[in-house]
Image: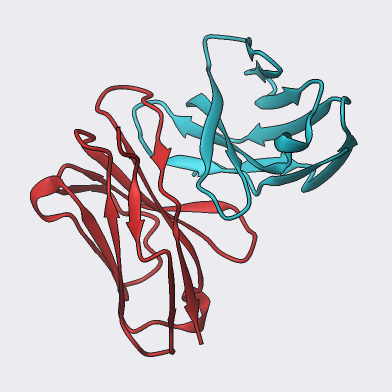
Length: 114
Length: 112
């Protein structure tokens, strides 16, 4: 079974530019999550999709971040325009439906804003 | 919202010794507590989890304990090996929700 895959693995952009991160969950997983780890701090929740619907987006930092999951398969997270404080590692995770299913993480995208 | 605190932030042990990482949580409605291990440059991997109806769970050299009254849970690694070196994250999830709140991580170094 293929795990959660994320692309790119590393992105370096300048402040003010736009970046789009992609996540392909494990096949059949309805739940998809985005998390972020900034500068050695905790892994912080950004948002949660159930299929194509945003179930919880309480962790999204501001309106420069836009997440989509059209068709309920892969998801994208766009940052526009990027700011210095957006640097960090962005993780995607997925899980099956049902209570207390474990979340499986991808390798993350390391985003560096210059 | 939920707040998870994790200690220590770094931990060095000699190979063969035990390592203990402690976490506390604030939301009494949390009922699921996973632990993740993240090796350098790799993805966080679920290594063990415990639900609130259980006080202790063991899997080979790894064990977790949960004290619901005190809102404490801990990870115990016995007979540590160099390959146990990694960052360990505790986490908590509230019943009925999918969002997981993580601790700040513990960098474990096992010295051969």
